[in-house]
Length: 315
Ligand code: SF4
Ligand code: MG
Image (tube, rainbow, N blue to C red; front, side):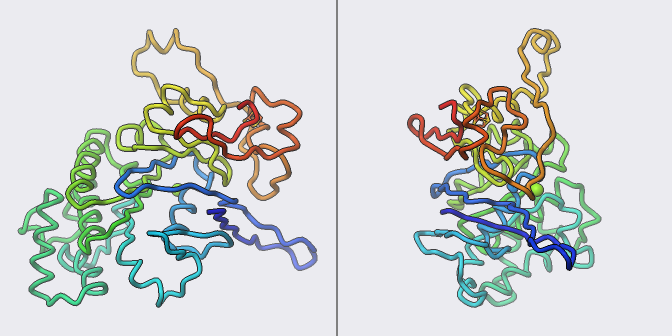
């Protein structure tokens, strides 16, 4: 609710104005229990920062984070402890997020040791069970990350995140680094685990085609703001925001004949700097439909029908 995350910029000692990057700037939305909410936008739009602020890896600059109705935005690290167990992350790069000096058992054991009071033997049972859930074997326990493929390493990362039975998982570009064929397998597995373990996902990705099939609803982010939220299918069938339309037209169309005939709107103009954000719509420097009011009034996210919200003066 009205969530903000600003990062201060190093400025010269002579400059009077402290500059900030408004990575997340007054964002309000909700994620239903049990759903997959996709969050998309170009790199630098603030989607990872938003995800990490929700999980309290960053302290918010302002606003509320309501988790099961409880505002966790300002909790101390001690007060956060019970929530940390319920919120986990799956990172983009399974290569760098797994400690190369720990074997699989030690990697998955780490959160179990921190967050549970299970004995070593009980934890081992959980680890073996988790490995099977993600399609690995008991025989993999003693192996080290370098002995696995990228897709298998991501499975280890998923097993680690899910071993303590969390409720909410932030998947930050969790499958972006994987081969397309492996992506589909990992997505199917994440969906199976979701229904088996009653998980809620926030699925952050720069690629709209990647979130399409896994997401129930999708939020589109542009320069620190969510500019459109819709049920997944409706976003593709009936995008409203000019930025969403441009993003969708950037999805490669595999059939060359279709590609020739389809009308493609290409985003023009530079991605403006998020440092100096003046008044009005942030997309106006690249928007083919900008009108005078767009320079003066910041469009608010408003419901147009059902669950479809958009922040644009055209609606
Ligand atoms: Fe374009 Fe104006 Fe809508 Fe912004 S508010 S997306 S500039 S039409
Ligand atoms: Mg990112």
